[in-house]
Every structure is written in C-alpha cells, then in structure tokens.
Length: 223
Image (cartoon, one colour):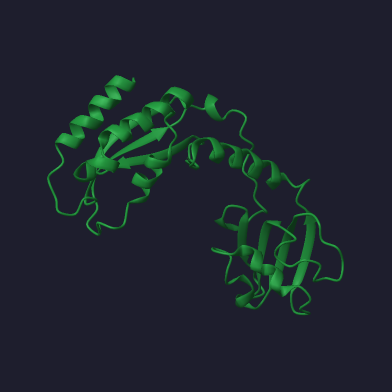
C-alpha cells in the first residue's frame, strides 16, 4: 500500500509543470480512514434542531422572535473570573439568548467573550457544568487525537473521517513529494483506510502563503 501510494505521489509530482509560484501546482492526497480507527470516538453532540456549528464547541441558532441563541462549551474562569459575585472555579457550558447581535460577534474567533454579557438584563444565560456535559467527552477525545497526530480529521456525510494532505513539487526542499509520502504512509499504516492522489491548481497562490493542506502535511509526526 505505502509503496504504491508513494509511486502515485511521485508520478503526480513529476507531471507537475514548473512555476515561479511554488504553491500554484499541488499534489493532494485524500485520506479516508477506516471505521475501526475511530470506533471509540464519541458521537458528535448538538444542542438541537436549528443550531449551526460555528466552530468546535460553539453553536448558533436564529430564533423566530428575532433573537439568537448561542451555546458555548468550555467557558472557563480565566474569561471572566468571579464577575457574578461568586467564586468561579470550573468550566461551564453557556446557553445565551439575546436580540443584540454584538453579544455573538466573536463566536467564530473568541467565543468566550459571550461572558461579557453577564449581568445584562436583556440577555438570558443558562449555565451548566462542563465536566458532566456530553461535549466534554467529545472535546477530550479529539484533544487527545490532536496531541498525537497534530491535526483533526473531517467527518464526512457517510460517517467516515478523512483528511487532505498536500505537497508543492515546485518547493520540494521543504514541501515536496517525499515528505507527503512519508506522512501519508504513517497515517495509513496507523489508521488504515484508502488514499486518492490528485493534482490541483491554486490560481490565487502566493509564495509566502503555504496552503493549509501542505501545512497539515508538514505537521504530521513521522518519527
């Protein structure tokens, strides 16, 4: 498997046209992992119908009464310590409802800033323990996976987990096909599954901006 995959990657790299922009032409590998590799992964949790996941552990819903409701998991004491007049020592899950869009302005970047709404009479906040919440188990599993593999896979519609790694043959010193082959071989050997190699063109490439799939490839531990 690894030898065949390496040959496919090297063949695609050799077919890549030369370019002054090193990240214009890429070789990408879609890895779809075996179901057995994630048999112990907890089921993804959702607050319910109508909620859209903004980022990991953060959801937002538009309500019929022109308000919005956000659910933010893992709000901790470092964000707003004891601002409610009590000792706040454990992480929590907050469900926040408000008609003010500014309350939710940072959900896709700094979601813990929903704590700024604490004490406002026009904002409804429900606080739960994070330690006993279903999302805590989900977070713990994927934090452990990320510590080991330095990336998080995507959950596909068919229920399989996958990731795309890439290389830039025109920047082969650091981001070339051999590092890609080693990273893919390491993941396939450990997690199983299937791999598909393809050549892509990035028309917006810039020599100082490394594509995400290439950065991800470089982060996979191969030692």
